[in-house]
Length: 340
Ligand SMILES: [Zn+2]
Image 1: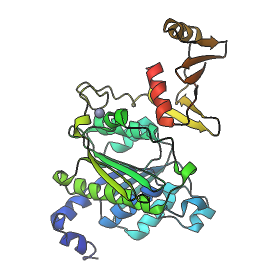
Image 2 (image 1 turned 60 degrees about the horizontal axis):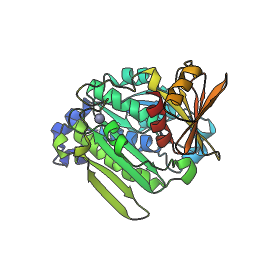
Image 3 (image 1 turned 90 degrees about the vertical axis):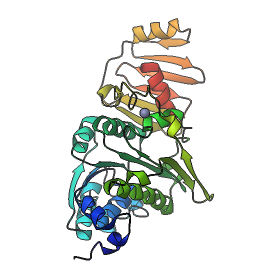
Image 4 (image 1 turned 60 degrees about the vertical axis):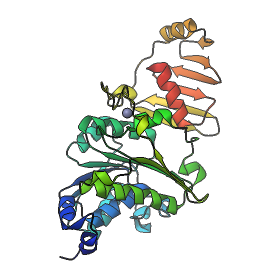
């Protein structure tokens, strides 16, 4: 298969030299859903050296419309996505080493899995993991490529430690995404393909060591509304950012900030639960809120406090219900404000 990569080598910015560089590179792919399968297939076909895949889910029929590596048989067998993807990718290109993990990855798992890699690709569907990936990337000095899509919209940004703003810098400034997910408003595969194209192109640039060709811009689009924007975000790099600033504390590489969130459907409420249980001292918390002049009620089991138009209910085990929103991003910002 000597001419396997001939068309890619003919492409001047890669060439035979780039192809050889790519063969030595190891990519960590977090998530093997729509974005994950698209990125995995492109990179494996392109001839990277090794791909490590992490995913906690199994294949369902409703995935097949957009998750390009899976088949009806995978769904019938309820195969874990990491396993089904590995099997299919090995059929596509047996030269690439594929390692797969069926895992709801914690921050310690991600830190360990990322250690020997050259690039991290975000193909997750949640901000908890992205904030962890962001800290892993900054701590280890490994680039990562953020990608998200819902409906006909998508967004992507490539983060280079020490050069670009990090995800935390952007996240603090970004308008909230309205809490939409593909479980609530659906998704078309074209939006997935567009994000994958941007992520893969940037991945190739990084893997062939041509970082100068990266745009450094935040890309957003809506394929149904025919809009596309590439926004310069250089100025958002924040020197006091806890993840990429001059004195980073990597806040998401700790159990305290590993949050699990859930939207309580139809209740306009978000539940947030720390990954590790911790006992909250309700009388102490009551004293803190009362000093701030906030209306508080509490009993031996829970504390309820009103902060502007939201009501927070805090349980002794650290679980918090935030009433008055169905937006996870907004809820987490409130949570961090109150508990950090
Ligand atoms: Zn930052």
